[in-house]
Amino acid sequence: MLKIIISTFFLVFVAELGDKTQITTMLLSAESDSKMAVFLGSSIALVCSSFVGVILGSILNKYIPPMVIQKTAAIAFIVIGTLLLFNKI
Image 1: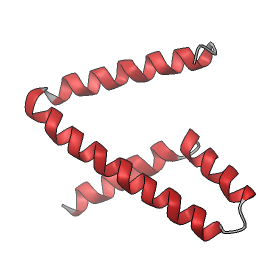
Image 2 (image 1 turned 45 degrees about the vertical axis):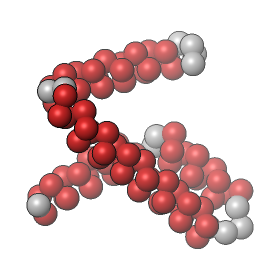
Image 3 (image 1 turned 90 degrees about the vertical axis):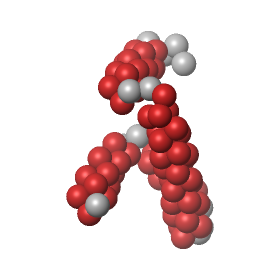
């Protein structure tokens, strides 16, 4: 169990570095007088979104093989990245 916790921590931590969420949090922190409020709000939001991901992942896993979920997510990221690259979204 500890191995899963550590690997999940590092994967999520690295994935979150420099993404829109972190940049938004930095901007909110720069504009706010209460850094602790920004930290607590962003932390709670990350916990809630992680909870939703775990619940949806466990439900999807009952009906869809993990490899299909992984490939679908990869394709979605490529499509979203391409759209962002060409300013379509």
